[in-house]
Image (cartoon, rainbow, N blue to C red; front, side, top):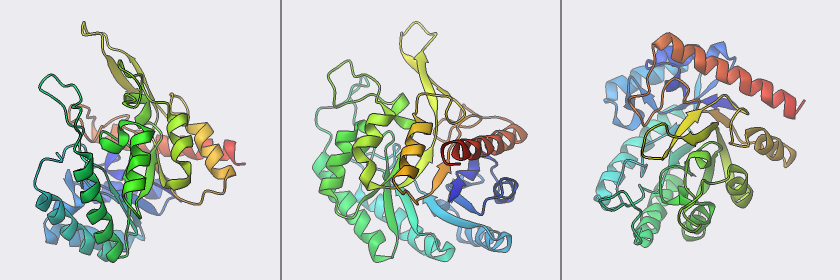
Amino acid sequence: MLTGFADEAGATIEKQIEATKVLGWCNIESRAINGVNIHDMPDADFLACADKLDRAGIQVNCFGSTIANWSKSIKSPFDETLTEIRRAIPRMQRLKTPMIRIMSYAVLKDEKGRDLADQMKEERFRRLRKIVRLFQDAGITAVHENCMNYGGMSYRHTLELLEAVPGLKLVFDTGNPVFTNDRSKPSPHPKQSSWEFYSSIRDHIAYVHIKDGVSIPSPTASGGEESRFTFPGEGNGDVRRIVQDLLAGGYTGGFSIEPHLAVVFHDASVQAPEEIKFANYVEYGRRFMDLLREVNP
């Protein structure tokens, strides 16, 4: 199954449907419509979008929620998360969406931006157990993404989550390790290896996000690094190798493109005119389909 974060093609549901149809696909990984996440939209707006998806014959195969994501603190009241879940479940049921992307809350840092030694992991585990159970009871699979969250700190942190949270499955993002420090290794932490991360958690993957890029020295005086996103297979995300290995192993889950070429969901400064977003999304999808044919003719 091929799908993608169609909000990177356009803000409106009409543009998202159009890009999906241009690619010949029938699925969207829905995240935001007109800049608002699905579980935060007013009821009338949500229902109007759901009807348009039905008429177009487009299915939402996964919901890219903001539940426990990189913008949410483990120190915030858990009721905030539970409120999002209560809004999300009936909407997913209306859309007949079987999976929801969740995370494990932001990494705690001190006033200088350094990781805190105490990441409140037991509280994270407690909350995720509750989150997973609530979705399971509604017939929905919660999949955790390796992103800017506790589980994304290294593959070891993800394995720790899996051990502590029964029923948790994974959505593996091929590109995120390229830009993320490996907190399981001594400081100064090197960047993660996508292949090492993937190889270590492969048996728990239910779904895959396709993203690629390179981390390069920043031109600023700080001596840091910056992220450059690329088309699939052109960066350091081991996309080709990972996809080939998955298919050789009988993987039947979905591949969801998240280009980030013209727009970055968590960085409002990275924007582009609507026609460029649309063209980049479609081109990215076509190049990924080419890559699929190359590794699995």
